[in-house]
Length: 136
Image (cartoon, rainbow, N blue to C red; front, side, top):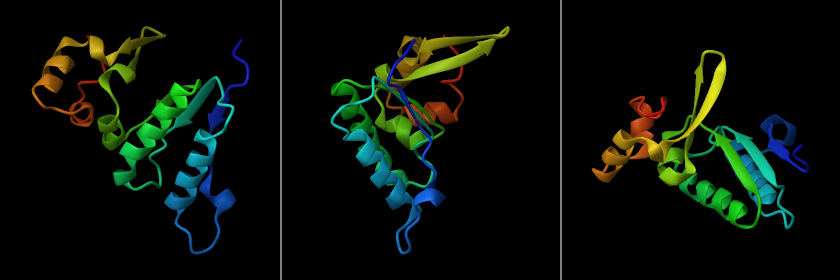
């Protein structure tokens, strides 16, 4: 069993002060969570990109990375090419459902993806082309 885990499901409407954008509130909430002096052993975040400016994805990815360095494991689901572009290929995993089972695979193990990244493609662009959806 995993103890002390945390699932981030922050809802903007629950904390909406006037004259502050939803993205500002959400980014502030992530920063408070990610700078907790006692990181959760497992932090799961679903689509952190929602309501955030795309230009913040690189900074947010680095904040998640710092949290993991301090002892918390981070699992993020995303549909954001910008967030994927901010990730390192060794940090990205794919999930494939086949015959009733879900297979987890490392994106870096896909030779075609590695080759395209070497040629200058980005993870976000490869995701957009559907090349990250299936294992090698």
